[in-house]
Image (cartoon, rainbow, N blue to C red):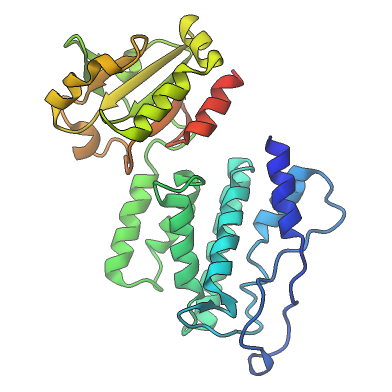
Length: 318
């Protein structure tokens, strides 16, 4: 499945758009999105994906000319087309090793920054920032990735191209994105389970832990619960004791949570945040429910705020 996604993405990326060059005065008002061209020497799918992601925005942000920028056009390309390309870019990032994805996001920021400094009246910097946030940080985005968005928003938080008020907001987002990053130890916390016992995340002993921040009655929470229960590989991991599922309620209507206890799978460890610390102390950046993490035996984060599809694929491969 991984290779097929890469092939699909690269087949779309290899189309040739109009080349850059010339001066501002002879630049046409509108154009198609200038797609990246991958040299034929790159034959391995992941190498091609890495090359494409790293240079995805180079021709669009070429500073040798500027195109029309208005409410429906970004540097000559219709807004809808730029948004579609950002969706493709974000999907492509998910196919890459984390360091390559980070490199591509940093390059996107640096090139949009350079373009804005040469053409301060263009909308390239603002629109690319808006779309990056939409795809990598919106809790409803299927290709969201806080780890990668961090590299973009951290730079926004200290950029002199951003108004002071917004800069502080971006810096705050960067701080939240830095919490519990993939490859780092998850933050420990205490919770009360269904029997009234105080437990801790690190007190859960298992080869793998699925940590879910959910709400009773949440449709998406119910769906992931049903998907996990109906996946034989997940059931086998739980039965063998290799996997523990910890579902923690982090809001304040404890009576409502208690009323829904019978709906949770008996094999799961269910509880609530009796100190309300997850939200008040911002131990985790929970922006949408459910928020799902996959942890290893040492509670290192393997997947952060992941999608049900990515989680189930990872568990099936264990």
